[in-house]
Length: 337
Ligand code: KDO
Image (cartoon, rainbow, N blue to C red; front, side, top):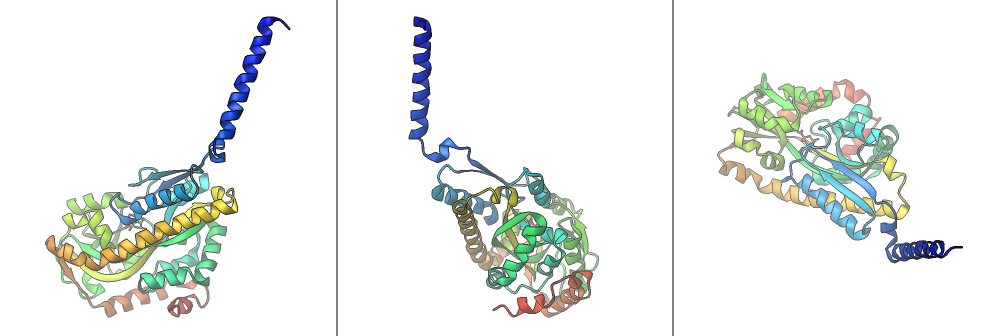
């Protein structure tokens, strides 16, 4: 071996052992690629179900330092509202919140949770989804949609929010009102059941629609009416309480199935911490929000709730949706206390 070849070999050896030293000095997570968790949601930054993703990220960073690369995308900036399940199926998205309406498109029996006046309140919602009902329904979701629901977040109780003051006592009083609903037939049916003329529009376009008058109103829980600033462009909130709405923090099975048992437990715990943060804050907020809207000059009215309940429930029970609800499911939900 010539002198120059010997010193080149020595340099290579030195470099290799330095790299080996560096690698062995690093925690194992840095030696491997981080697991990418891209999140997409239409939620606005000020909303609790947007802020909860930071809780998810921080919780996971504490329990599994350096193992996950959590990327939060709000305002539907990555995928438009409702397009998330398809993006997950294509492998372009790992995590999102899915509504019962999005699930019902692919798992028709889930439409029982899109029906008005079935889930009674946030506590009932948690009990239902943490009971065997949730386990069974989520199993079907995992099989048919290739996603795993990790936690149930309370979106809030949906109310009717109108541009102009109107005397609304019963569903008949909403006849002809162009009420914006998210754009799928399951959502539009909820609008029909309420007695309005449902008008599909993406969440991000609602503020302008209300401002310009292309729609007469929209329905959402009070915390969303505040965070998306719909109160600036509307004059009335009618407290119909028509849907105790839930969204499900869900992960694509493509990434879920590749995780170890320990990682799965940590991701699930982070999702549950995020949901709890959202739920506690939304529930507290809803309690004191009527005063806020009144202070902003809105009229807040209470309609004949029995009339709304009866009309909406009858519409669902007579619909094709009810035909595919699992036998006895409605009774089981009602009997969950
Ligand atoms: C909405 O578009 O009205 C809705 O409330 C529907 C929900 O399922 C959810 O998508 C929510 O918007 C967004 O997260 C924005 O708050």
